[in-house]
Length: 109
Image (tube, rainbow, N blue to C red; front, side, top):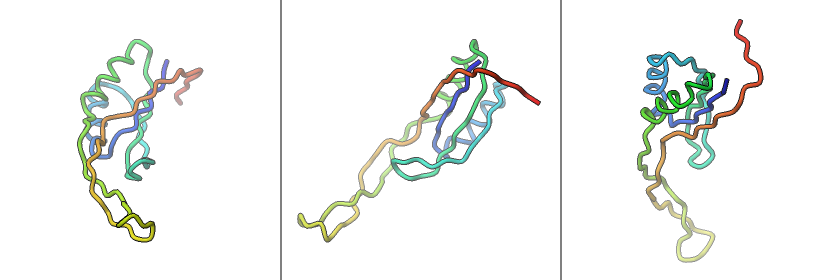
């Protein structure tokens, strides 16, 4: 048995949750915050039998899309460090960060 930990953007959270249920995967959903954009995201913990890992990852991949987003970067004005103005830059967000870790023991009560 393995534990899949998938960190996804909030925009993909409900779609992924519904798809996991349709595919008969049980998941625990946790609210989390990313370090890069300091934006909300969702972490799914999914217990999976070894032979179903690829299927679960396929569900995640099909429901979590990378998208471009404008964010404000702060740049110094005129070479001084006293004055800063926000400068929009485009970054890719979304998709999923997926970790698969072994489970030593699992019990369900």
